Length: 185
Image 1 (cartoon, one colour):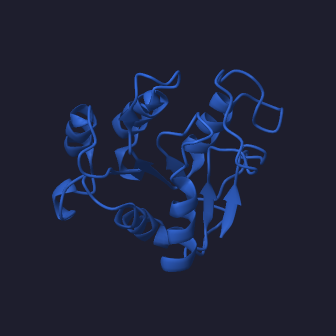
Image 2 (cartoon, one colour):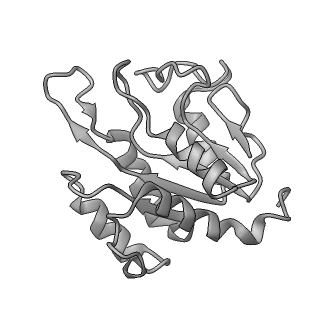
């Protein structure tokens, strides 16, 4: 499995690639969900493609200003993410949002995720996979949009969007199977 972080180039991604979209912690005491996703992909699902992780390799938090150079110094995080999301074979949206008004960052509100989700689910729903844990607040609009646009039939998932991170990643990697032997496509 090849893992790309902000420090890596995303100029030429294979179709057998997966972008891990969703809220990113902005505070040091909040752990990212992406290391767990990478572990599931590698150890449980034996995914052999490329995984695009919109975080820094060393675990440092992304810049608050999406226009500052934090993608290897050559482009903004916004540009890096946009270029990657346009190329990958699938985008897995894991929306484990939560709010804490006492924090400057508000916890993990998924403000950027809302925009990315709307953009790609509306324009390219076949590449989008969506999941969230049960009980997530302020999520019904995303649920409705995904259910309306989803080419993957949200009803086939046992609990609709309330599925586990593992199940979300399994569905996304199954979608990528036709691309496994065509890594340059």
